Length: 273
Length: 273
Image (cartoon, rainbow over all chains, first blue to last red; front, side):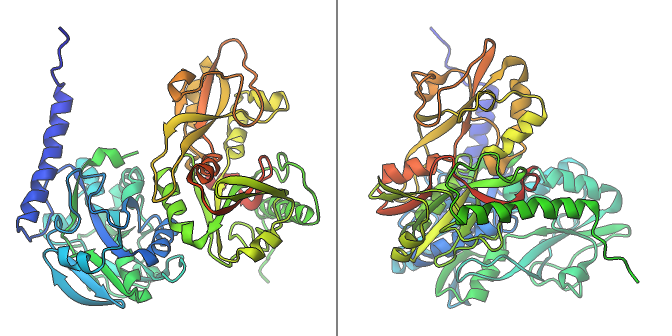
């Protein structure tokens, strides 16, 4: 008789994936904290949901701006389960949601099932998140200053316009990580291998060229920790489409709340080139 | 006084780009032959135009099937000039167009201006073409059998379903190039550097696994020339979205006619990683 014993690799992968399901169940049952550190090794995603009538413009915006908007899954109208997370329910499996009307933040909820019932034709975009490449940097011995200080990554609105798409427009938002000068090239090389999670930096040094006048005062996240000899390195950020929703006055949208991401069952290595 | 003399590289690039404009003008003025060999070094593209009401489904289909459908530009409703070719007019700058109604081929025209006037909300997708990576293979000394025999590349419908998107579905179409066994790995390595023009092969050897029963009878293009010691290597093909238009019964569509492509002003190197 042939053995059907799973290999050690299969078992490790199944265990990792089971942690995704377990985390989503915990969130569905009421956990409302940030997802940082949950289900390590699995990809976490940003959420943007818009009415079907706006879906082409948003999808085209992501196609024209792949670095800030790397789409890893699209849920069609009426669909609430992501192919990246079997058994998931996008309406309840994120610890916190933001509700936007005409580009204005009008509410924050722990469960979006009711909002979905009121807008049943929502199309949802899951967008890669830089948590994924941060693990690649750590493995290479590159310090992640905000993690070491137990802070959120600093993010900045820039003066650089994204390529508009139909009615959707907005400026690029970047995240910044201070990297020791001797390790900047390595950080580029590593993150370039993760095109589905923002890829290589968009800018290195010279924040003023991006229209950033004060590095110590980010628009989102926490103030940076910068050590002597660090260079500020800027990556395209998944907050960009959220800023575009605002700038474009999209009549209705649901997004995740900052730091509260959608946990998939996909290992980070899936997105490494 | 500062010199404003262009560099040799700038001049060469401008000369190359001017050949794109010149080719499109020649086509607009009536040239109706195939574009193979025209404006060498510039990217040529497949065209798919569909009514705005179908644009989200088609764009999502390309997003879910990037290897057969690498989108290099999208023209919004009412737009007829591609950013990849300043001064272009998508309605007249291709030597031949096919008209599709309810998934059936209903006409072939040399100029699509009238068809556009009847369907002013068309959204046009320009999709990368494997002409681009063939030059990369030639540079590496890998023979392109169909070129040497002055034939069109053989293309086959496969039994492999693409990921569907809304109302759009269809099977993968592949092109096949017989490659000497000793050069197959190199052909993979080179084409992998061109993700915007289909990238690395989807299958190497064993045509039956793709549902191809007779290599000598392709569904599109010409019969292959296979030398002793060649391995059949299959790449995802830009005919795939055209096959999906048919399989999905899209009410109206315009595509380029086979072999008659849209010539951009973009050098092939733009799409090399």
